[in-house]
Length: 411
Image 1 (cartoon, helix red, strand yellow):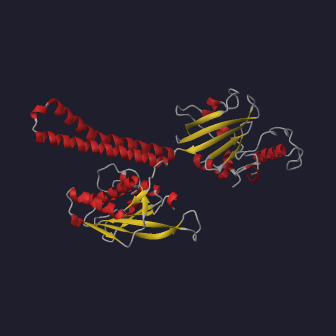
Image 2: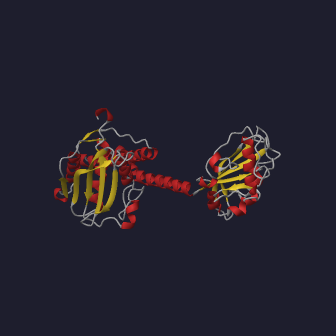
Image 3: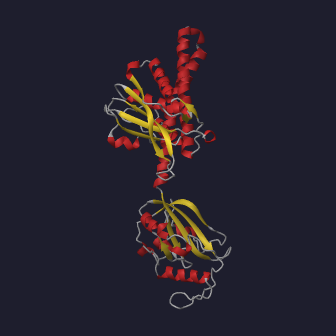
């Protein structure tokens, strides 16, 4: 949809004339300002130019774009701006900027009267992004640029960028939830550590050796809990920023699984509850052993805590898949798959899509809700994939695959 009107087409003719001196604009009439802007290079955001000559069409831009000419009349109002403001472009084109885009600041002051882009200080280049209000009180992120032909010259165009606030608000809510979760998870163990250490320091002689040992073991366990939480936060930070390092070494997945099962049985679970099945010879896997231990530990603990019946761990070679960036007939990558399933109630169908998001805890509360989010980040950092489904026995089934991942210097 071409959102430009006769005013925008006239601007297009002027821009074409500026880049081709002597050429006649459409209609055969030469604009009196033919030299204006002649030395200015064209840009993708130049709404006066044809889309094929000066960059993408305004409607192809992901952000709202509103452009007003030197008289303050709107010459461009793209589709994203129409969506964000709920205004028909036909109603905005040709109207004054402050009428087509009536903005107010958070104190209720009219924004264009307050900033005065055409009559304000000549040294201003625009306005930084800030929250403003549309009619009805809906917030929108607005930034503006004042286009001048020369420094301190008159404003020839005002270019306004509009963005919705929904994505930023989701990010802010996620950060607020993370802070609240961390504060809650830290408060309990730190209260315990502080209470026991203060009691021991004040009344050391009054306790027996067994009582002292019990208190110190509790302090040690709570300190470990705080350490795990801090490690989770660091992992989340690295995952979100794409800085999670993978130090590849040879990993025996079957041995790693058996080691975790032995730790769970030593913690009081019966050995009969676990079934380990290794199918066929496994390709030699190169991965980060500490991070793979983190993945296995989280999945097995979840199966024990939230599932029921037998916890089955299947380890098998996975069908080789083509390299993602290459053609289907290109080189393939050997993979190993690990499946952890239980016989409990499983995960509701409507929750499947949220399992690997932050703070998902399922029907049973407890924990930070960050473990599976970190598991997904670790698996993907190895170039693998992880999925969740319903097991044959009715419980939850987590399956992750890892590419063999031989380091380049050994390939």
